[in-house]
Each structure stands twice: as C-alpha cells, then as structure tokens.
Amino acid sequence: MEEASPEHILQFVLSEKLGESTVGEVYQAWDTTMERIVALRLIPSELNSNRTFRTQCLSTLRGVAGIAHPNIGGVFGATEENEKLVVVLEYIPCTTLKEILSSGSFDNAKFLNIAIPIVRGLNHAHERGIVHGNLRPSNIVIAEDGVVKLMDFGLSLHLVEQDISSIETDLRAVRYRSIEHILGRDITPLSDLFSVGAIFWELLSGKSAFAGNSAQEIEDAILQSQLDFTQLRTEYNLPGDTILMLKNLLAKNPEDRFSSTSELLITLEEMQSFEEGNSTRQFFQVRPSTPRQYLLLSLLAVLMVIFWLVITTVD
Image (cartoon, rainbow, N blue to C red; front, side, top):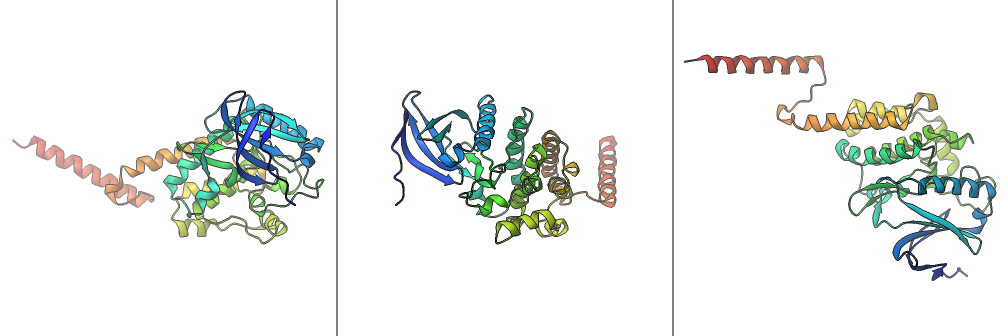
C-alpha cells in the first residue's frame, strides 16, 4: 500500500505535491511561522541516515543558504522530522528546462538568452566554493517572470550510489553526468562544466549528446563516443564559435575544458554581443565570414564614402 501523503510537517501545511525524484518528494507548503509559501523537499530516511550523503548535502545547503543570486533558487533552511531531512526552499512558479526542451531545439540567439543566466548562477556558486554535481534540465527552471534559476544544490548522489541499493537510476540524469562522476573521481567546477556542455548540446540540437537504453550504455557513450560537431554545425546552422564552445565543454580531459566558469561566462557574453551586433547588419544579407566577404564590404564602404564626397562637393 502506498504511504499516504502528509498534511502537516512541523509548522508547514502541505498543499500540493510538485514532484518526486530519487532524492525525495517536493511539496508546495504554507509556512505558518513566517507566513509565506515555500517548497519542501522531503529527503527519505535511507538517504538521511547515510552519513556521507547527509554531510555533503548539509554542507552544500549551508553554502547556498548564505548567498543570494537571481539565478539560484533560495534555500531557507533544513530540519528533521520522522527521520526525514526536510529542506525548506524558495517556492518558484516555473517551467523546467526539461519541459521547454520538449518543444525542440533553440536557435543561437534564444540559446544564449538561456545559457548566460545558467552560467551566471553557476559561476556565482563556484566562486564561493560550491559545486552543483547534479545539473540537468529538470533542475533548471524558468520562473513566471522569465528569470532562469538553478535548483537542487547539494542533492548529488555520486558519493553514495554504490552504497544504497534502493536508489533507482534515472536515465535522464545519467545523460548529463561528467566523466569524473562515472569514474568515481572528485567532482569539481570543471565537472559541472561538462554537464553544462551536455545540456547545451541538447538545447541546440533537441537531442541528447549521449544516447543509450541503460545507464551502462549511456555512461559508455560519455566515456568513449566521439561527438560529431561537424554534423551539428551543418544540420543546425550553428556559428563556429558556438561549436568551439561546445567542444571545450565536452572535452574528455578536464584540463582541455574552460579553465573556469568565469571564462565560459565571458565567452558566452562575447558571443551574445556579436550576435546582437550582427542582427543590426542584416540588410547586407551576408555575414562576413571569409576574407573575400570582408574585402567586398570594405570596398562597398569606400565607394559609399566617395559617392558622398562627390555629391556634397557639387555646386
């Protein structure tokens, strides 16, 4: 028999179940003490009793609770009730990136509008020593006011997956795992960047970078497959700088990726600046990408200047 959903937890009155994953159920609730709507994540007792997970989770949650950034979902606190860890979170009416992806791929301009706030939030966390370790489209949300937010900091299971047999593998989550996660190595900011690369690939193509019918098949693809960046460029008409950015993020060797999230953010902002500048030149109907095109446009500009001088000097 399925366990009945609780109606009250401590000072919280539960009103609606928002979702469920391997790290517990999430409810909308009314905080009768602070008189506000919150989201409660109820982490099950088996995970809460695992010292490694509990220590990792609470350490990360404390770090996130101590910062405020528009692109990071707020953490208000954590407590225990009936052996479960109850995490009190900012309630955000939103749509997940996973839901948005069901509509297909993004063009380069729309992609940058989503990618930059993702990386801004992640960079803010990384600068404070906080690694996510569990990034995927289902925990990146777009609030009703259009603000992109990262959720679920502290809920990575990479340290305890082998210890807790009841954990069911979520194939969607496996697709965004870093190589370091799969190999059981330390998860670092560069590991988050690999996960970001897998998310970005899907935003731009509408397809998973790493396919498979089982967790093992997907992990083998992450470790061994060589992605076809040329096909990605030709099929979706992506500019070269976008392809190069993806190559860096999805490099097998962490040392071949961007050196930091800050470097990635600068790159994305420069790409957006070029994209916006290029949109003002659309009347040329050509994007100068070869020396010949640059020469032709330069000659056209010179001829226009000469024409202007001629007509202004005629009596």
